[in-house]
Image 1 (cartoon, rainbow, N blue to C red):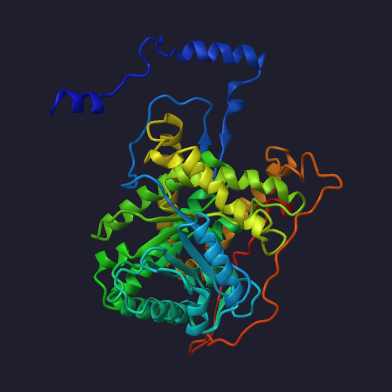
Image 2: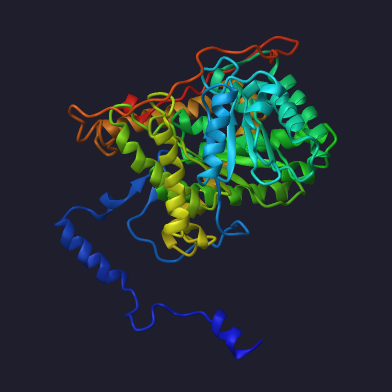
Length: 477
C-alpha cells in the first residue's frame, strides 16, 4: 500500500484535544437544572415499555448494515385510470423518481383502476423495466397482477420487478379473505415460483409489518409480524419448489417510518438483525432488503400542511436507518388523492435529502451511537421474543385468526391515547397550535368508476380474523 492510500484510509480521532467525558459532571449539571426533581423523570419508554435513557455511553453494536450507500426513491402511483396513471408515472420518472410502487384497485377507490394485463401495460407505456424497477401493491389480486407485470416485462431477464405478493397483509387489514387464507398463500407461491425463473432479478414477496404499525402497534410487534410473514412466505415458496435460500433472497421486508426518526431508524437497523437471525436459523443466511413506507397514522386531516414536516422526518429515518427503497406518501393523503403539487413535494423531500443533504452517502450514519445501538438491540430482542410467541401460537395465520396480534396492537393504541391525554404526545395542528381558518390544500381526482377484473376468490370457506384497522393519531386525541 502506498503512503498516499494509507493517508486516504487513516482514521482521524475527532475527540483529540477534548477532555474525556465525565458522567459525574454531567449528572451534577442535570441535577442542578432539574432543581430537585428526580433524574428518572428524564427516562422515556416506547409503546412496548422499552426504556430510553437520557444518556448513553458504550455502544452495543455493531449490527448488520446494508452493503451500499444510498436508496431507491420509489414513488407511489395510487389514483386514476390507466391513462392518467401513466401520465403520473412518466412525470415522476422524469422528475427524479427511480422506481414505482403501483397500488391496484379495480374499484378505483384505494388504487389505480386496473383489471387486466392490457391495462397495466398501458399504464407502464414508456417505462424501461430494465432500468426503472416496478413494484406492485395489489392485495388478494396479487397473483393476477404479478402475471400482468410479468407479461409487460416480456420475459426480459434484466427486468427490475418487485411482485410484492402479500396476501397476509390484505387478510390482516380486511379481517377476512375471499376463500381460505392458506389457499391464497399457495396460489401466490405457485405464481411466484413460476415467475422466479424468467425474472432472476425480481423479488417475489413483501413480508410487511406495516399493518400492525398503522393499527397503532409498536416497533417490536411490527418487526415480529414482518418476520413471521417472511417465514410463512419462505415456507410457501419452498413447498412450491424453490430452495429455501433462494426463497429468502426473493423476499423484501416492508416497514413503516414515521416522524419519530430515532425510533424509526433504530427499528430499521433492528430489522436487519432480526432478519439475520431468522435466515441463519433456517440455514439460509442472506442480507435483508427493506422497503420503508411513510406512516399513514402520523398524518393529520386538521392541518395537512404540517404533514410535510412529518414526511421529511420519516424520509430521513428511512435513509439514515438503511432502507433500500423509500416510499413517501403525499401530505394530503389523509384527505384524498394528491395533486401534481403534492406528488412533487413527496419526490422533492427525498431528492433534497439525497442530493443536497447527502444523507445517503454514509451506509450507517447512526452506527456507534450508544443511544441508537442500545435502542436497536432492545427493539431487536423484543421483536424476536414476540416473533417466537407468534410461532408458538401456531404461526402468523393462527396468530392473526386468534386475535393475538390484534390484541397487542390494541394495547399500544390505548397507550398512545393515554399519552396524548397526558400531553406526553403532541400532535401539532390538533392537540397543540390548532389551525384557525387555514387554507385547505387542493386535492386530486381519483378514478370516477371501477373496471372489471378477475375475482380473487378461491374455493373454500372464507378465513376471518380481528382486523388491524388503520388509525390516525389525531383520531386518538
